[in-house]
Length: 588
Image 1 (cartoon, helix red, strand yellow):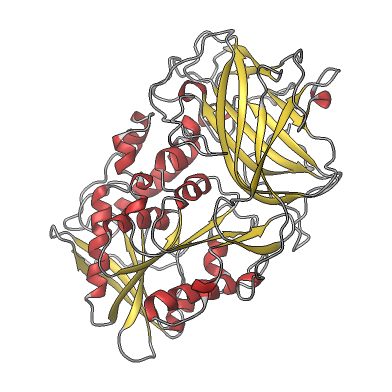
Image 2 (spheres, rainbow, N blue to C red; image 1 turned 120 degrees about the vertical axis):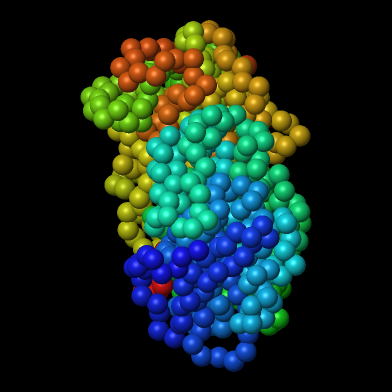
């Protein structure tokens, strides 16, 4: 394996006080050589514990992984590694597969055997770094002492087909990036061309063995023996639903931290914020250095409330004292969106349905052909608004929506539903409770999303995948099999359970709950390789979708309401100081 043929420029300089060894050779059990980067403290005596950041991305970058400037200064060695077949690694890149998990095991054991390591190894990182932890940890490498993880446990539901709907733009960007990273920096002796990841994703439109092997760690989470520090920033369009669903399945010692929304869809805040990394350090020092930091005496769960800007401890997740509350859809007495509302009052027997047009090819498909379509003059959606809240309501936990709907469409292989929920302020734009700055919407919006609304939850479901596995479903968390697709018959009312993003926010008195239902979304393609339509960007197909909310068909939002109780103990520094705009590192 060549280490010197390519003059690679790293994106950041090596921090002061840190020594970098580039492309150290780690041999896997099948003879494949992996190139790893090792960051060690210049000062200090004896071997140190090590932290492995292992991902499908280039190991030369730091984005969603621990920073050497912080952890080397506290007596840790950082090892950056990429999947086999990527970068300077031999072998064939295979997208989060079982071989990648086996390599993770071998990397941990190789690190533990090095003279600079004391035999104690952690894994740490978010997104792709988190997925690799979930794949590796169930194999229980003997020297793996803990995980610090944020990441989906389900690549089908989390990354590629949320609700069974292809997240086409993201998939194309992800796969092209991973493929380019695998081929980069050029030919390496022993490296093969990567797996055709895009063809595999597009050909597996249903959940099944391919997805269970390639990023389906939810099937094996309960095998993990190492302690797990779970971190989740909410909202998060890729990771939140599956990670928090899997939290209950972890049997080893564990903790959960729900971090603030910081106007960033990805995770640099977690690994750049000083206070938060000081808290993570307490966990690592306990499990890798045997130091009594007091962290295991603290309650299991710490939640940041995006409405109040305050941290609070809880004893479990989901919270046992959750009071589930239904907010029903209503049409009112007039015409148009202004008369639609949502409230805890059950619907009357004779409420009439609301109807919107469904254009079968969505904006994402149009854009993929480079076609600029005119802005619609009428919304292809139905929106609902609650009366002003008469008191604060704390919404913490899983959220779902029960929809009763029908369509006039004859062919429903692609019919999908997208639900978004937010808080509407009386005027102006939503502001962060800590910084006073405008909140940035965490998910795509459209002209029918008022500027006064901040989105806090959303979900999608392809109607033909409405089948549930009741044995796996929990309150607010319907579990769809994403198998056995059954198309809808026109003119027939169907019940559909749609899982939405968990919410951790107090909705303030005087504000309103806003809800939108649509059948297209800018981030998704309702057409995929299983479609019965021929793909064309100029399809005139159009149909009507009806949303029902009468006594027999009570469409409703299902919210986890948390009543106030006295705190068992306050959240103290450094964690309570980890808030939006808290001080960050300036170097890696």
